[in-house]
Length: 333
Ligand SMILES: Cc1cc2nc3c(=O)[nH]c(=O)nc-3n(C[C@H](O)[C@H](O)[C@H](O)COP(=O)(O)O)c2cc1C
Image (cartoon, rainbow, N blue to C red; front, side, top):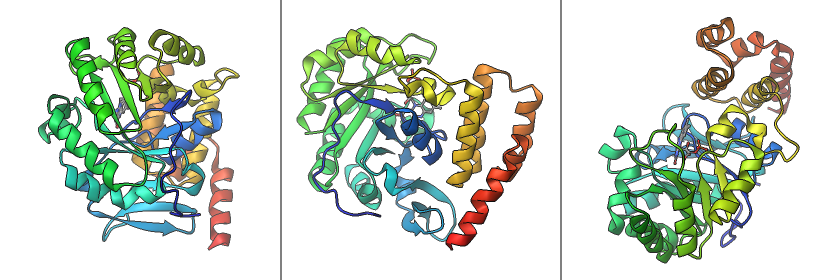
């Protein structure tokens, strides 16, 4: 059912495997695929409050989805469906409590929780006072989180990076806990760290020891076994994976990883099924190929030249599936 009330319902953040928020990657197909393999909670990509405020909510009867679409256009900013309602987390970029609340109200009836990104080190985030810029503004963090917490019926959470010293990170985590958030995700890297720098699990452990809300540990979890390793090392309630899941979403499966080529095709099929944004599908496929193979080979070049999902379906000999999906949509109209 679309938008039916789950007011007051809390996600259980204990012992969960979580798909991390990833720009351009964490759209509906990857979220559904990760959940199929075993992810319990799936974050959407970060969407900036300013962008959300230009959008309206539309029911898409053809796909069976709820679409958040830029007004006056057909540009889908966020697509979700009732099947993922109990596990999808909407992540937002913001630098202002009132704006964050107005934006969150557009999506909150269709998602399980709202998360604020306090870790993005990219220039566009920092210059807008968002993402990691918030880490040095504890009063603003408090204002944003308490405003959302008081006015939304869904759980509110945030995702931070490590500060300069474990003491500073712990102080911030304690302040965040006081706002009443339901969980805190900690990416075990500092703002200046690069993805290749090892995540500091011991500094996540310091946060876990200092707060009593569930902590979601994030950083360098690539294999199913790593979920247990990071939980043992940090004591965290739950674990979040980003790049590992982007490269091979079957990492969430207790049965072990499937060959990445198979997962790639499953991802393409989900993209077709949910009529995903072509830029998101192309980017995600290219990231998989760049990791396991090479974008300079014919496959990568062909993806670059593809303009539509139909082109990709043809490239991977999934044209029959593409036609079948489109025919059945025609019938449901
Ligand atoms: C392609 C990509 C996009 C990302 N986008 C976001 C985002 O939208 N919001 C966010 O909080 N973190 C984002 N991140 C950071 C991840 O959520 C995660 O914190 C980081 O990659 C560390 O986890 P890992 O070691 O499992 O990759 C992104 C990471 C990647 C690789």
